Image (cartoon, rainbow, N blue to C red):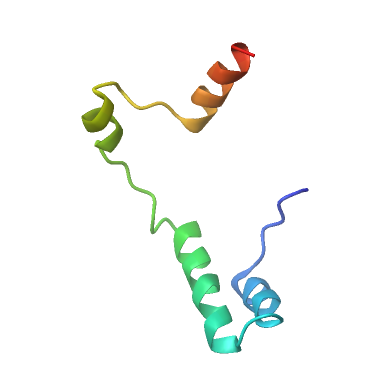
Length: 68
């Protein structure tokens, strides 16, 4: 399965095929906001909970693959 980036309109219309249009627009707007950086933030939660520095998802995945 490949990822295909859709425009707001494409995603909204695709969702509207299965949902009422007013509901289809909501996740499409959320997707657009996230793409524009709405959720691009860093917190200290991992460090506070584990007392260890956080690592990127890529670093964790690569480390796990080494142990298989």
